[in-house]
Length: 78
Image 1 (cartoon, rainbow, N blue to C red):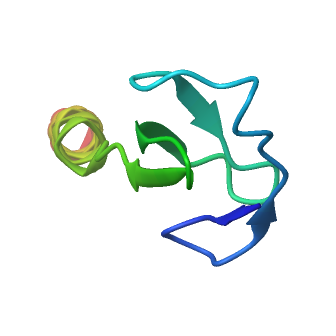
Image 2: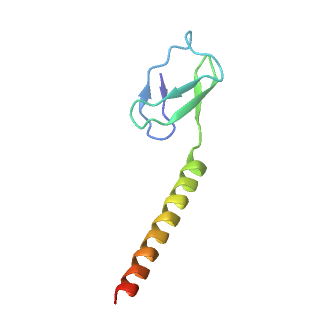
């Protein structure tokens, strides 16, 4: 058994069935974890924060452009 580094949920891992470098997913929060040691099994969370931030920035930029377009159309109508 190991605990998810993000949510502390117990993840059932058989140390005889995993290999170092293997990627596991937490069943509760879906955080991806890399097995960094076996006997005993230890895992580290794989950080997706940078990717998520980039995606958020892109969607925010797109939303802002859409809002500006709507405002320009309103001005043209009056």
